[in-house]
Image (cartoon, rainbow, N blue to C red; front, side, top):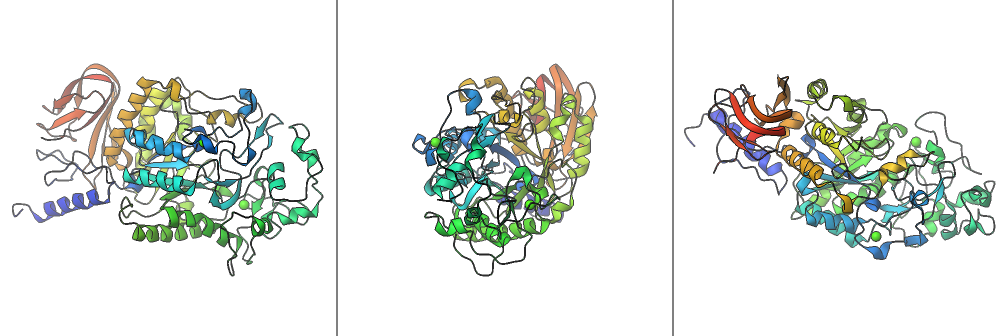
Length: 576
Ligand SMILES: [Ca+2]
Ligand SMILES: [Ca+2]
């Protein structure tokens, strides 16, 4: 070691530290000291540098109910029913659950895509029945987790505490984090089934016979018994005894949902229905506000199971101070869990939180000061016309994100709240997404060409949440996404590196991460014999590999020759 200069030694130490902070399953294949500078050098650098999770998040978003049914015994919990016709069945619970995700983890589904975190919609207890969907078009159940009833227990359709623990532990053993979707803005509506189950006397006789057309006629909206539900202290609901929703983003009743009074400084008692509910784990807390209860309930999942992060819903509609408080409490809870579970934790990375702020682009926001490590990027999916040659997009994102630790974006092609990306353009789309600077989010089925479901005229987003197409997977498309995802998971340079265009026809670019020395060269829409310039990135004599085709090539006079299969993903080849 004495032949190394001090700064070379530091560079080697830096890489060693990096390998400790990386996922268990992704050991760095570094066998020699490296020189992390942007200039080419005969001494080769790291073969792979995944980066810290926060610097290179690859998030797979799944609606468990629509993914895989691992335990048919929990189907139909709380008396939930399917509907015979697809157009009627679009808003029911379809049977998927946490056990299904565990099964797919064991099959390696996520690992093969390079995924480093799974975001699941909220698995805690939802309203039991259905509300009127769209313009009386379908029975709308809470299969998506956005109509919470009891934040302290699992929804029986999702699974048992043991099944949740098994899922989290299985993910962690593969170096994959689990992110919960959390909603602090609102609980669910009061549907007829839940009102019956909670014995709330707000229904007219024979309410169990309610149909889409006459549903609201069975509910007595003038009845003060509504006070036995969440109650005035907890929500703005415009019901007898409650205060009305406000006119601004923070206090409005989004889609007429009851709005939590998260801004209130008044201590509250448990809501009346939770004082009576037999299986709740909610208990009275001294001197605690609505916000305080919600933060406790949500962060208990972190403290008990080691949930690694949150995807926060409707960020626009809750005060930033509440999000900051949630982040602080969740961070402490995760540290606590890791201290008690040293053999189960992936590493000591901190709690991570991404927010959904409607309309947000990839730019830095004031919300990054309120606990958010990243915000969902609503812009990316609209840039499809650029995806064959996304130079403008990539250079802009790289300028926003390279050398900016602690701030990221999460770009996606498709989402459950906007639309599915064009199903005929998922090759170009997948490449653009998986090669984009910043964090990325794969929506389940973008890698398999999952077809859209039935689209109600008055609620077309339902079509984005169809069942995972296990029986009709597009294998060629899946192989494409797996190559790209695996490549991305090895290279923090893609997410954080400085972007530089090298060629126009074919389109070739490099990314170099100054911190780790990680570097890649990419060609898009380059098919057949290619002679690709890598000057300034890789040195003559270095052995490279095209991770897309599997071909190896040596750098000669600043170039590599290979037979390209439309996409070229150049990285340093492992040494033997
Ligand atoms: Ca099930
Ligand atoms: Ca609100």
